[in-house]
Length: 367
Length: 104
Image 1 (cartoon, chains in turn brown, red):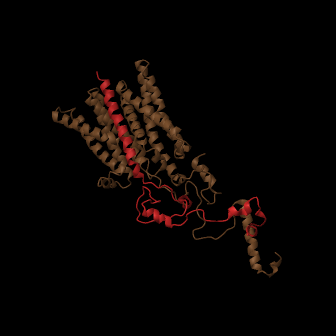
Image 2 (cartoon, one colour):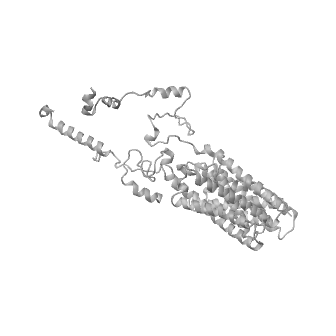
Image 3 (tube, helix red, strand yellow):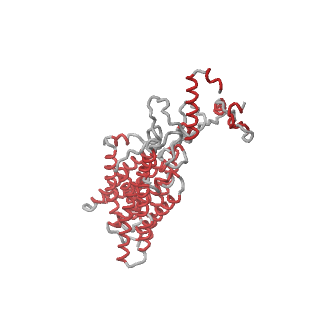
């Protein structure tokens, strides 16, 4: 230290600055000095919205409101076709069979309309029918819808026509079309679960093994409920189906709530969590309880209970679809999941500066 | 020498800061990756599949904002359709037996 005088004073100043910086680093854990400003600086700050270099790591679904509504209508009409065909073939309830034909056909028309409206440019739907791609659930769904629409339309038209003209051929055509509609209705009622599950959106992907079941049962529940509200509220078979569907839905709700993994956060917290829960309660435990209760009291009361259960199920089914799409949005914004970073949301990502983030985060998570 | 580097901070108790010295702790050469690939043990192998290019990331992919286990979502299609088939079966069998049972 004694020979400092001989040293170049610039070097001394630099050494001093270096010591300062080191001290600052030791004391605070980071250096506040401006540093070099590379092109593009200041670099984006990590947050669920901008976690991955200022852009969301995953693309959010670009779906508009038509899509979840289509999920609901498609699920309900697909299930209605199957229920109607079974009611017809077993010869149990021909009125249900008739109503199911109209329901399924109406649902198919609405579904196509919603799906086409969602595309932005309507002629794109023709392009969807130009390819047949087994590894794409969307392509499979488009074809299922095309087949389903054709056959439900034919069976409903035959049903309507047979009200005026009594020709055997029309009935046969109607019955054959009904059979095919049932065949297409089976995948059509729940393929949307596969569509969501086989994506990169973490929360959907996590539930790929139960989402189709969840959506399928939700569709069955709403088909049963619509039929009940249409006046079939004395059919014991429909009540049995409603019981099956709502118990599976209740089980799925329990499964979601007890899954401790970080992926399921959008299903439990914030806005998306609450609508998931609302939908789950309305389509699972509440109708299950009401339907069980309806088994015991007098006829009038039991019909009333079933009607309430039906209304709850329909509302729950619609809310569930919207809630899952919303949860997908939240999940896509969460950069921690694909990076497998097991950190609380408030913690800064890697070594990026964190100061301005926390407020945005709180707004985003709603905590 | 450690005294010269770390000054008073280097004491006998902390081994004169010997542990702070940078040193080789294992096979850090990139050569091992190539050998692994030759043997078919591609360390970067995932369901994402071939880009026909190799990128060697030193250390943890997370440090580079890269996903450590990238996956192609279509590998889950089978699981999804299995569940879909189960749902379809419940719907079909459920409604069949429900209506069969309620037949008069």
